[in-house]
Image (cartoon, rainbow, N blue to C red; front, side):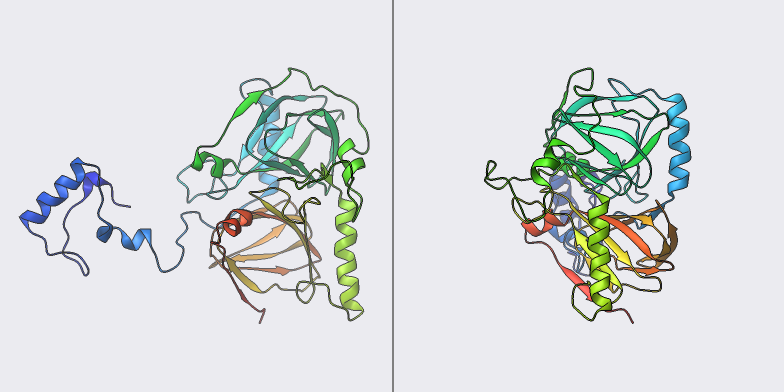
Length: 367
């Protein structure tokens, strides 16, 4: 968008004829910090979205090497809080954002190391590509983190992490930091210096209360803005995806499209998304399957959980394998092809656009 201090009359279609009087008018606009719509309408109201964010891929092995080096050099403690290294989309001017609304980072914890307790209004989750041994403690409830698990830290919940293992662990953090920053809604508060509960239960209290398929405790009625389930375990996600593909083999409906199973993590109190600002899904493609080409208003980040394939975003295509992350900007076409059996985790800002009734989806079937 043109800065008010650089506003000048131009001889172009749809613009008024340049004249000394028009230049004087524009200087008046500048002095009052005003910008006329007729000079900006192409940028402010394009015929279709023109996202600043770029399609981009980050390689997990490269991220992991740098995170390991940071583990040698960068302590975890008050002030820095987390050894988390954010993905910076090349189209966003150096901001530590994967997309304009989504923050994604690799977080790394050394053996026997703690990350201090704090809370913030930004919603967060963890997704574990590999490893185990860390417990995240959310409002005093220890939650085990293991490969394939999807774990929630809704906004304004005190949380810290502790690694009980003799090996380091890394995982994906996802937050709505850019969105909260854009609307000026963020608050942060440090918590106790020590993680309050250093026990290591196989299941958290939240899972014992809430994570029973189709059942909810009568003692906790009413909808909640975020899911009360602390961890969606891989064994359940894996079984759900396998069952969809098995039903396809048996000639019954269930898959999203041929050879493509998908599940959405949901809030059992509403049936909707796990958090008000972010959607999370898991996808499984058979070897050789290709998705439809899909574009939607809103952005997303995909991470390969297992297998290998190709991801095409707009005019760019990358071969991807375990851990690799891909940013998909708003309204840019996306298609995925599985080289081997391919599992992918996806999170997006779809709930924001749906609540604003600004969502739009276009699907072109695989050719």
